[in-house]
Image (cartoon, rainbow, N blue to C red; front, top):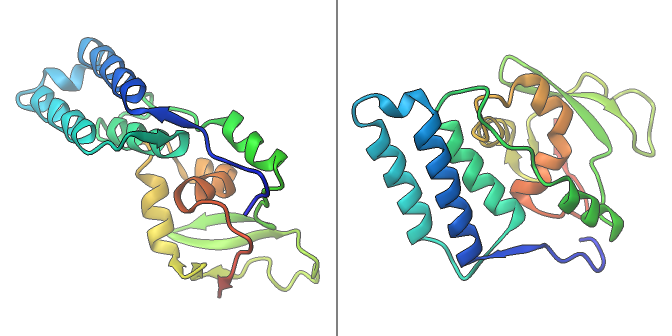
Length: 177
């Protein structure tokens, strides 16, 4: 884990206020919510999030909850960017990044480029079955659930930060091929 890194948190009241703001904006602007039953479904989802909130929520968890909710609209134009500030804070406190980039092909993950100590090239192109015992299928499912706009390109580009958001700071990455 990154030495000295401590995640930033929203208070329950602050995140609840943000969810209400999000809800009002979406309710007034998104045409899908004009369809029968959709606005009720939307309100139910947000109410469920609010009812299950703890006293505080990390920026990353707040992003995941809000993004997963927006993703239900199936609209590639509705989404959030993850907190670059939080990621920079993690990196500044000794956070490690994945020593590789990925390529996504037909619901499978592959090593695109490897930047670790052993740069023999033997890893490039290898299929990733799991990272830290988390299957590639589970990783892709969670990342795709962030938004309709999280495309293959988005996963490839932000794979490391997305992995960090879902599974937290890692001392090492154990890749199963």
